[in-house]
Image (cartoon, rainbow, N blue to C red; front, side, top):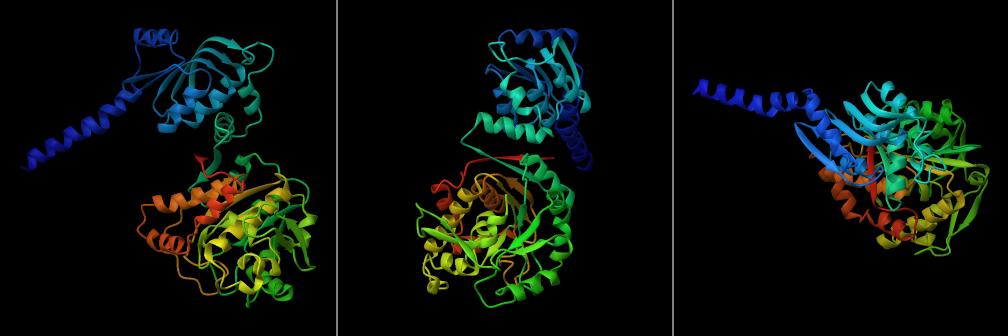
Length: 449
């Protein structure tokens, strides 16, 4: 019986591991390669992987996107009619082993060489031109300043799917990756840059730590901004809030500004579902651009807190927080109907997005995801494992992606966080914000690798 099991195991290893690996890396004969190249007379792209050949007839960059939606090019030999800068970036992102092109551009060659991808080509040109031969190909222009394959992939995908947001992701939660994912966004936050964080209620310990964000804040030459709370605690006055910020060390890494320390300003919400005005810290007017850096976690009132909550409640003045919580009636701060509260947050998000006029972007960090907010001075310990860092120009898609990652997690510890989100109907802020045009729920998740 033991000998039979050993034989069975050997067969499994042979057919499941060894033969597929061999097929993926075996050299094509000259005859087979010639046959595949000949297929480019009728196909735009041919992918040879694991001993199988897959052909595409769609024009331009589309077949590469179709392929990457379901797989990658690792171990593959790809045969393409035209390879320019954009296609080369996608082959690098997908880890192709070898690229053949009827026509290849010099920038594409540089990209493939830099990433140690073997290539062959029939014709080499300075650049890929548009169909009319009057200018550079639009996708070559789109990606000519891309700083990474992931960024190029995002630019191309968004161009091809304008109704879909791009969300970048990395599972490694490090200071270096925080900077890297921001750079991948390709967003040049300039001028006086505000970095909106949650300073954390003293006693709590799950909030994003200053040392973690230090490198990114310095890269942006940013000012950490906050607003006072609307509830009793250590952050409900400017004086006490500054003490809490100092205790937590934020003032040691950058300038810190309590934006409502000198009052508030009004932002209109003409088409708001619940509120028609949003009260924010008056210092918001001092900033040209903003990074909303959020700790994604549960929340005892909102179900979860991410980019949308940090932009709405977080930027609201102390009075504005109560106004949102009460759906326009501050006296109802603790008694407001749940969906009205969530819709009020979405209204506030809309007002901030309109005010910033595109000079704003978002990063969510999925670490130490307690069911409780960082405003809790005695939060429950996290039960779900850390997931990663996500970034997008679209806060709706970003929060939706985080929610989906929680649901799709294989960690059984997710149950308590999901229960909290569902009990408080947390997803409704995403639904309402999408309905208001703050962003879209449909997204493409791109790993920055």
